[in-house]
Length: 349
Ligand code: GUN
Image (cartoon, rainbow, N blue to C red):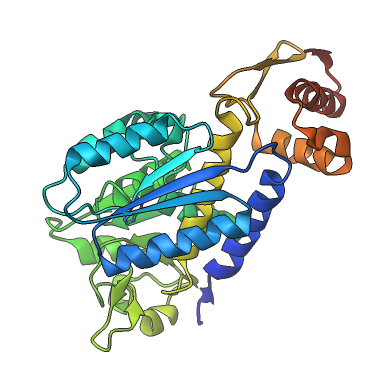
């Protein structure tokens, strides 16, 4: 039976609409700065798409297109300036950087609270121990797709092809946290074909056209193609032999129109989350529970609002115009009261 095609474009539009609606009630637009060094054409395309996403979500965005000759010092100075800017919530340095620039040092220089790529070692550490501050964008996008199509990794055999810091490693972690049994394969894996063929969920993030053939896919498997390659005719394609594999899989993602757009929506979600947590002028409310009581305080790094709570809060925002004024005290109290009301708790705010 032919597989169900997972529609990344439609899901991305839905996620961005949620982000737009949430951002619209903030007293200030979330701000994203994107730095591109050099003239890699693929990176240029990605950066342009991110600008469009920001427009759609009602974000403020800045783009820095720097020449390939930019020095490490200049790049670090720009990052430091953006770290200090109150109107910038997220900083993204497009990778790869041109030769001669030290990627590791640049990523370390980004304020972890503005690291919307989830590349800073602090955020990678938080992700690893299961308390993520940001979602890694591409793996986060894959998880959104699985959720949207009611595919639960719990107890499933999940095989990840590729071990990059951007995709393979964080992908394995997210699947593990979702209770999958995870196998990571890479260039030194001798029995990659057999392992791939054992997968209930197969994620390919290698970057080699035609790598995943139908004989490497179990009947009924879910196949997620993260790669963005070009075929001999110059057309965009992934790692997976789409038409042959679609005959065996239960679900499959296309390239283009699959993981890519959802990845960018997760970047928007991360930027919104950073804005919600970030400094003065943005919403900086901390909510936590003590016994039967919801308590609020106002500070940076607020993490305590669950998705369900947030959905309820934002629902209330839309019907209460006075809460759109940006007066944070009133807003905070309103949130606490709204939550307390729903949960039947008492309020101490
Ligand atoms: N290059 C390829 N993918 C990414 C990404 O997700 N973020 C950044 N910053 N650079 C990339």
